[in-house]
Length: 154
Ligand SMILES: Cc1cc2nc3c(=O)[nH]c(=O)nc-3n(C[C@H](O)[C@H](O)[C@H](O)COP(=O)(O)O)c2cc1C
Image (cartoon, rainbow, N blue to C red; front, side, top):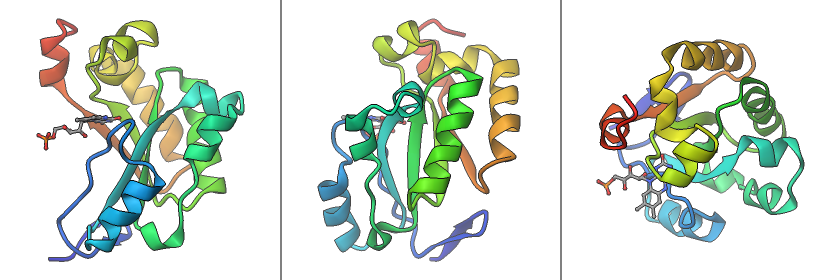
């Protein structure tokens, strides 16, 4: 069954989960060839994009074949998340920007206060969303209060 996120048409209800270290270009292409409706990428760090880290830039490679495709970004700083969203929207084939608000990994939640740690601060989430929706047509926030609860973050 076809469905839509905003104006992005998706052929079926099979969506690839975003998985760090798994959803690289090769894996995504194989999954797409099996008729997956919506492709998700590995998460990339907002700061790495802001500072032009070349390994991160390589991760942003995606082809038309993979579309519709959603690029996940991880971060917690309003300025760099907004910069990274704009950069990805303007320079890649991404149809959807996905902000990671669900990752419970301690490295992510403690060090940069991102992933599900963002669930702790609804006002910050509001300002991030308000800033990014002005720039990209489709913003998706993948949150998880359950995972935040598991980390004693809420
Ligand atoms: C190896 C691995 C990496 C993952 N990386 C991410 C990630 O970068 N961003 C994210 O939102 N979720 C990530 N997840 C969570 C998955 O997207 C998915 O939500 C989770 O595995 C639950 O789905 P399941 O019940 O089908 O396993 C990851 C999961 C796995 C197993």
